[in-house]
Every structure is written in structure tokens, then in C-alpha cells.
Length: 266
Image (cartoon, rainbow, N blue to C red; front, side):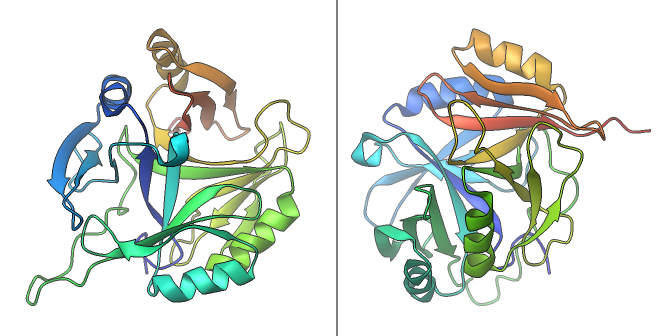
């Protein structure tokens, strides 16, 4: 059991009309590197890798569907068609029906009942004799990598129920977050939690979103640098009672993401 188990958020995609701007911003801020690869539909797909990581953690195609720019969290699936049918029954809306994905697997996109865009993805079958890929989630996440995700919601209980029914998530109340009610989402195979749901019902501005959270050694310094690169700060930096610091931002194209740093080692 591990990070790559079904029901876990294992990937992200960026919908953007300006790939160069994405590369310039995140490459400078987080040290990401990019590799363009062909896709089954004869288009191109750009893989995103954090500094020092053995495997990519996300990617993007050129163009933003419907002109909407943003991150899309991808949940691992064993049967995309079955998951799409089940999620529709739970109140999700299909945005893109199941299609071959860039890596030879299969994926589909949906909106949860709060309008947050997510995807379900099934890995391609490995070639005979290829063995098993390393677990990209093993050990502490590297700086610049996808270390957490956050779903902000104006209806916390409804969102908790949807994702529990959809992907088998369990929840632990994080009392260290004092600005709002926050629950760590414990996805299947990961007993520590790999994301969270926050109650935004009383928030000003952004209430519903699904966004990735990236590791940085120093959140205030990273926020300051992001601002010089054209980002805007929506919330934070804020530090929990146990010393984890985080902030929520929008990049120069209005794409929402979060940064966090681990508590200091005692």
C-alpha cells in the first residue's frame, strides 16, 4: 500500500494558454524542469519534474479548454469508465469522457458537486518484464514537489461525504489549523494523509477550489519571490500550532496553488 494506490491524488495537470509563462514562473519559483513528449493523438505533452526527483509529477498540453486556466488534480483509478459512472451517480459532472492519456493510460475529467475540476487516471499496462516503477511518494517530498493538495469548500460536510464515497477517503480533524475548520484527507494506502479539506464558508473571496500544494523550505521567502514574478497572495503565510507554514497564491495567469514548509525539526 502506498502513494500510488487507487483513490490517491498522484498527478496534476495545468490548463494554460501560455506554456512559456508557466515554465518561466514555476521554473524560477520552484526549480521545475520540463520535457515535451508525443501523445497518442499526435499532439505534444509537457512533463513536469521537481528538482532532484526521479519521476515527473505533472504535465500540461498547450491550450486551456474553454479558456479556463488552472490546476487539475488527478486521482488514480483501476477502471476509468466505472469510476466516471459512479461519480456521476454521486453528483459529479463529466467534462471530458474517458480517452487515452498522454502516457498510454486512460483518463477522464469531471467536476465535483461544488464545481471543482478533477480527473481520474488509470496507468498504462507495463511492458512484459518491465518490473515495478519506484513509488514516487516514498520518503519526504522534495522541495518543489507536490507534497499535499487542498480542497477548499463552502460546504465542508457535503464535500467530505462526496470524496469519501467517491474514493474511500477518511478524515482526521487538524486542530493545529486555527483560522478555519480543516480535515486531513487520508487517502487509501496512506495512513498519514496526503491532502486536506478546508471549511471556506466564512471566507472572503475564494470559497471552492481544488489545488496542489508544493513544498518549499521557506514559505515567506517563496511568497515574496512569487510576488516579484507577478503572483498575488490570497491567504497567509499562516503557521499551524505545530509549526507547518503555508500560503495560498495565484500565479500571473490567475492559476491557484499553495506553498508549504514542514515544521522545524526539534
